[in-house]
Amino acid sequence: MRGSPRLVVIPTILAAVWLSAPAGAVANPQIAGLQVALRSHGVYSGKIDAVAGPMTARAVRTFQRRSGLKQSGAANFDTRMALGRLGRPLFGKRALKAGQVGWDVAVLQYLLSTKGFPTGIKDGYFGTETVKAVRRYQRAAGLRPDGVAGQRTIAALTGERLKRRAQKQEPRATYVVKPGDTLTDVAARFGMTVGELARENSLDPGQFVLIGAKLKVPGRTTRHLSVRSIIDRWSSRYGVNPRLARALAWQESGFQSHVVSNARAWGVMQVTPATWSFVETVLVGKPVARTTEGNVRVGVAFLDHLLATFDGNERLAVAAYYQGPKAVTERGLFGETEQFVANVLALKQRM
Image (cartoon, rainbow, N blue to C red; front, top):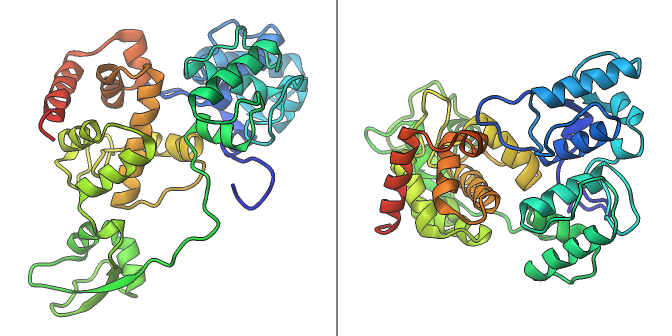
């Protein structure tokens, strides 16, 4: 992963887990480990759903009060240590195998269940049922069915892609500014942010750019390809139907990278800040550049996650993309969501 034998697939964002779940919040697998640990201490009786909702927050504060800790509502280091064996280690820190106990095992059990490979009770103990579930998942994912959740198995479960050892230097090219061009236009054309383009060319992003100026931009890379090609590339990477991804992107933005909604969703895939953070921390495991390509990657990765969450049901996955998975699960599709989904599925036939 990062040049170290230790696994770091889901970053240790729970060094202090702040518990808040706005409407339509997505699940954070690490929260499942917290919920299992809290349940073992008799302070949590809700679902192991990995959503940091009010019940989980109350349970954390109750446990902290009983343990003589500051009632911060955050599953910080002291709180996790007080939780005992189920309070550590965080998921992604080690390979998991039979006989182990811990927070990370509970997260593994949750993830396997969401993929359709239930482990029985989610108790944080890597027992026989968990071994069987891991092997079933490994066979389905084309991995060696050894029953050990190592680097490749965890990467597959979380959507992380293993890094290649060497990456080629991205070639550069020159763009000559034409009448009517702005930095925003040029940046969007090459899948960059204005800040990136300005830094690359030592420009003040607040100033006009002169006609005839030569700007350094990405060369013949994926950034230089059309939005459609970028969508197809990431769809192939994540195993998502490219027609569905294209239809969703067109319905959201018309393939325009500069569109920003009132909810602060932006770009081709209209990704909100909360969704971007979730994809970076849970599905990708590293920061994703705020570029057109990065936006497409985040949107397609999230769509892939929703398809897995809703067992491949495109209608529900698209609805959850628009409305939020929790709201879809608990309240069904709103009227405007039904229309959005109908439009996307109709576009899919023509994209």
